[in-house]
Length: 140
Image 1 (cartoon, helix red, strand yellow):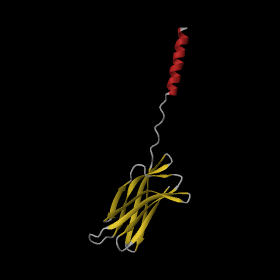
Image 2 (cartoon, rainbow, N blue to C red):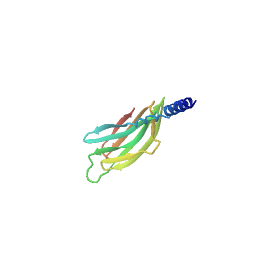
Image 3 (cartoon, rainbow, N blue to C red):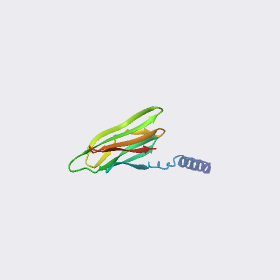
Image 4 (tube, one colour):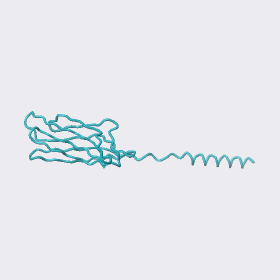
């Protein structure tokens, strides 16, 4: 009888151990970085966007822009827009307009997400007062 009880306890311990095996940690999201450039004569702009895909969404992390040339202290302007299409409708999830002297870093608020099933884009329109161009990065 004692052996049967010990065998039963061993079976329960084995079952419990098998039932509580720790799951492997979730695979960390991979950060994707994409870059696009534009040109208008001597003037050019570059947009670099960083995002990760998690839970069916592309989570926008931020990025940076570079543009130029600028003459002296003349500052240019960069207008950033992140959007996606759903059917025939376009949805803007983030936009920002700022002055720049050639380099601008941006971060987006939490919740700046693009559905992974929709075609998303990030565009930066650069303007130095005499020339302008738009760089567009696909989000997919």
